[in-house]
Image (tube, rainbow, N blue to C red; front, side, top):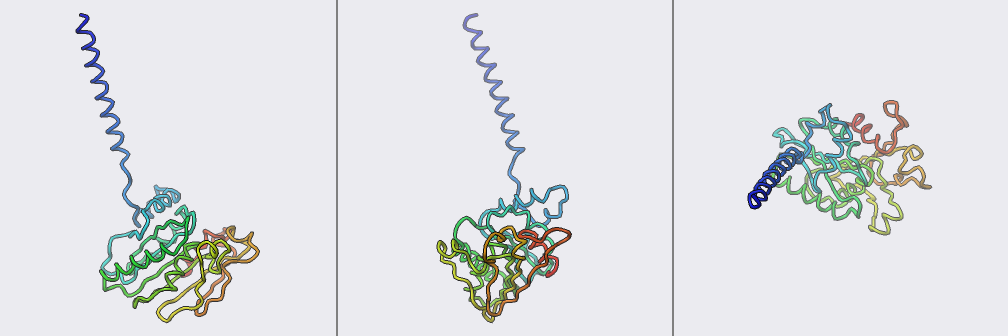
Length: 253
């Protein structure tokens, strides 16, 4: 008896351990990571805008397609987020801007550092798309806040034959002392023949990102740029920093 009892207990513990292992394995399988967000997910009313925004920001760094390649698409449209973005401010604008002629992308980049390397990577990824798809006749970029600085850098150095249209929304294109000194930022001063720039500026006193600055960093004179000052309200809300993208989506696209 003194030999059998420990053996029985040992076997019993092994069975319990095996059951627990299977339980944790099944639980882990049930929590498999979600697939990358797609444009069709933006229309799912069962998912909150905040959760959709988090999935958007969870995309890997680089150029992320938000829909399958479209045969009728003639334009690549790329959204570029700003600093410390939570993603939710892009959900309504992206689904509003989308058409059958546009292939929508979201550019995820490390916005806690300088912008130049990410801008160059974006341009290279655009070149790769154009080399693979000769039906594309236009590239459009829309950058919000710090993302507009990245977009303006791409615009400034654009040498590709395909026309580029850039939209910068609530972006500090004038620069800031930190941006200028740490990143060596130098604003674009004129638009080349193969490009177009549209600046969508919030009102200084209504934009929480800029209202405490003595000088509005959106105020800059760029030769050939088209400037629009946004109104003070949008759908009954103060038209501040994040709402600005939705206003542009509604009024422009």
